[in-house]
Amino acid sequence: MASRTKYRLGEEEIHEILSNRRRKTTLELLKNQPGPVALRDLTDWVVRAESGESPPRGLRQSVYNSLHQTHLPKLDRHGVVEYDAQRKVVSLRSKARRVDLYMEVLTPYGITWSTYYRTLGVLSLVAIIADQLDVLLIPGDYSVLIASFFLVVIALSTAYQLWSNNWIQIRGLLGD
Image (cartoon, rainbow, N blue to C red; front, side, top):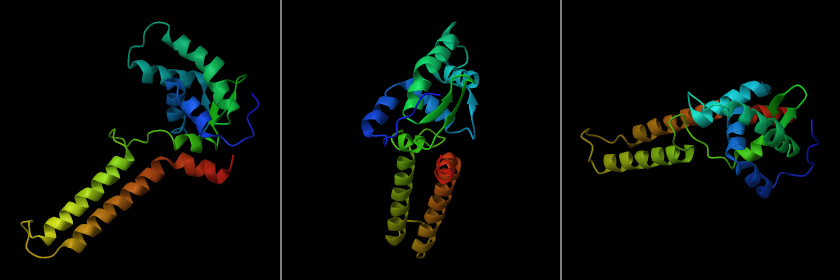
């Protein structure tokens, strides 16, 4: 295990980490794992992410070597992952939370969470205004019901987002 930096991970280091697609893919894959991951498994995931179902010949060995020799040691030095080069096992550390803030956060449907929430907000505003202007075909004032519906959707979406990214909260609570 390489010695990790003791200073706070700055923006320059974060951008350096995320400037390489393989490191970014590695972090994206590791954040969905509850514990340590074997380098062999991580290699297979990265190969699939880069090439799809039928990887070009030799890609697996190339990915394995670059992860083992370059990318995982670099992430370990920055304290983002813990990489045991002897056992060939890697896991996220608490500094990964700081890097994650700079990564584009997507919903399972391929749009960013910020776009999703902004769309919900605009839709709720349009629905309430339409109700107030009697544009809706339903007679009566349903603004409170419409607003309540959208607030429930936003609350459930937020709960889902927090639950699906629970690695951030768990590692933060453990303080590793």
